[in-house]
Length: 590
Image (cartoon, rainbow, N blue to C red):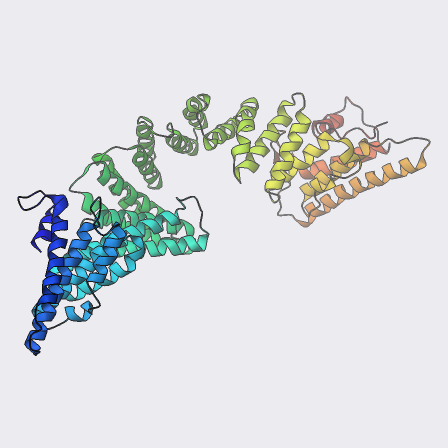
């Protein structure tokens, strides 16, 4: 036992060097076995049997401890570290240590507790595959062995924390394999349970609470139906974490406070039914936490989150100051998030020019991400800077996700139509198709796509192959666009005075246009509450759909030579400003 003790101290002594203490322990215990076999057997008695049993247990403990120590040597006497550890477990024999630990015999109970502790250490050294055996012994120690309980509780907490970290990594697919939603939720739930078990360790409480809060945030993202529960749990975890880290202060404490403040804001967003008082309380709590975080350690993300909280509280000037403070700090995103937040605040305040000025420096540096490039394009669109719109959006569209990609295609298509630079029809057509494909329910996207096909003309319109791009509907505008499509189709047809079939076909297409316009007029009468004044972005003006439906019938009458309209007349100017703009004033290709 003495040599084992010296080996555990890991220091050279007069009795032995560190590396040789374990070997001396093994040698002495082997001699003990030899001498025991040479001794004459004593007379059998309960006392003698009990003494022999305790002696055997002590000797087994010493041997197992020596073998455990030998496993750590560079050249173990038993061959390999694993062989030493297996021999250590064998040395402990088949005693029922769990039952003996509960013995009323104090000596036996103490020896059994030492055996359980030793076996748990051996299984720890054998690696993760033996963790379940180690945990079983540790739990028996906690229940039966007060002298070893504190160390066992600490070790169980370490195991729980390690398991929680593995579960969290799997949940976040940090290993490269992304789990499904249900699996990720299950992994996160198990991670929270393991972090909770790890709270038994004072040393692990702070990281356990921090990571538990992070897992709850991820669970809120994955399971929106339980988002409020997870945000509340995250708030509890981060609040405890910041209380534990308060004494140390600095950036770690500030980070705990920033997460706490952000969680308050997320909870306010997640609650579907929230009273003004509840919302005000959550936002005020967020502001207090974030302001304290910044006092501890001003940080880029904390300023941005505080700016968002100020905005929610109606404190726009404070929000602007917070975003500008964030911009003054170095950041890994070159200040993009702060720039976007400030620009949105200024735009909402009716200052789009100032908003664009905030974004332009980062945009021109070519270091901006897709969100900022898209926002630059959108703000330029509101200012009718269509060349600037195309410069910004053309290069960013391939990197945008829905629904931004559809809106970007729409703005680019409108800008192409307004600028009308060489090749504009085909580019407008591409943007129109992409916008409508991304969102076929948006009225303005359908309008752009239909008008793009009308303006491009070609075989697809002549043969009506692209008619679905101007879908029928029940609104006056739908009928107007479809009638214009038929006008364009008629315009592209070769009508010969010597070919009656071509004339009949041309007249039938004009009838389709007429029917669409008249159906639009009926729809306008049947829907008196529906607005017939529609803003056309490419014309930059409001269009009275009822007037255009009537004008469409006038165009058809002209094509049939039922009326004559002088080109210098006001009627012609009115037709040309709309139907002429879209190239549907001609009556045929011939």
